Length: 116
Image 1 (cartoon, rainbow, N blue to C red):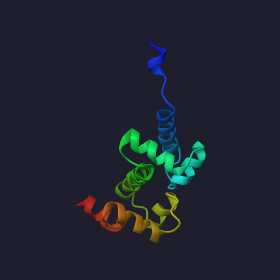
Image 2 (cartoon, rainbow, N blue to C red; image 1 turned 180 degrees about the vertical axis):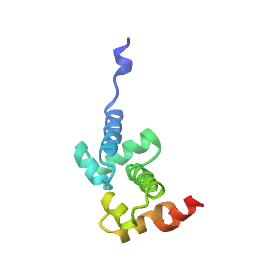
Image 3 (cartoon, rainbow, N blue to C red; image 1 turned 90 degrees about the vertical axis):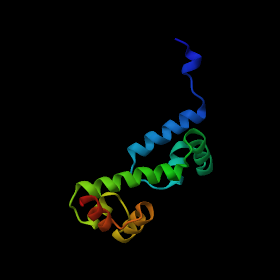
Image 4 (cartoon, rainbow, N blue to C red; image 1 turned 120 degrees about the vertical axis):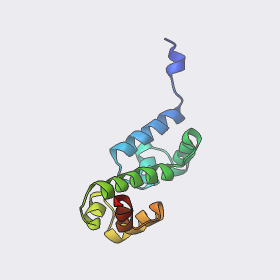
């Protein structure tokens, strides 16, 4: 077993720590919050993410958020305002704007499209 091969540099460690934090806190949507938790600047976090994956930290956060909101919209009948509340959006209006920006559809339209 080659110990040198197993060691990772700090960028790899930081990237893995970020993705682990993202899984633990899927409702957190601020790059600044993750950077603070990791003890680094938001810019450095995004640089590390971009180097390791080709996506910025904010893109990673959006991807996780969109996957979760799609899951709720596809697999539940709860009202939109309840989904927004569970996902810790400040209000249903902001949730609807976020959904439209990232999926191209309103939450209701997304639900209808998926059922047809």
